[in-house]
Length: 324
Image 1 (cartoon, one colour):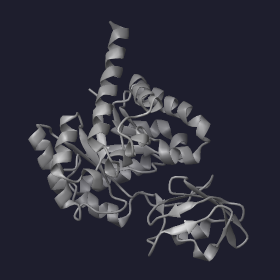
Image 2: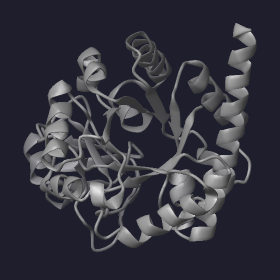
Image 3: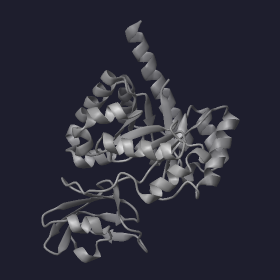
Image 4: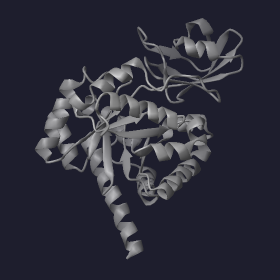
């Protein structure tokens, strides 16, 4: 049985919607801790757990930590970046560690690559514009910025994990097995060894050490958003298949995520390509699939889960016909 994960957010914060999502086949949900904490989310988690109980489901609660991911600073208001315009480097709202790493000619990807800037002298040219919101992702193209595996906020959230019913931790931007051992040690300190560790593969460093990461993880997450920023996009499907093959060989489960049903943020039916994407993930051996904005802020969260369930069931049935 394929695990189906949604993401908690405003669109699915009420008990009725959550219960319907569980009834439609959802196994559990991801809580993104880049913008909040477990303590602040207690009421939402309680509704999530009660909805699962009403639907007769033992729910999985996954917390997605901050980890070594770089993010835009908090903004007083959204920042409009018009294509072709320039922005003084001093006005770039990013952490000092990013500022210190930037060099002339570097390209900067913001908000999962939706915005692209290039440093020329003391200013940034907007190559791909848009609206920049607080706490969106930051990536210097083709450059690694040293960061600790866990932030102090991560450690605080891990200390609360057991009391909030967390069943798995998603560690972002895993670079080596050492990152996983750091998380595992923090869980042990909090008597939470039973919590699974999901390693998100999102950069070249993780790819270069994928074998050791697989061996150290309870599940691998093929996180195609940031991974697609770090490698040429046309190569991403092949990389996904390579990771899947390595996981199958090692008998370690893997999860596929990012834009699986992104059109359903605004539309009640998916595209053919999206359904094919989910189907192919399952036939490649995925143990789980996940959606993010589709349920967190989309207009049809319960329908998203229904489509996921029907598609994964169809893929499993197809696989069964090939082995009979």
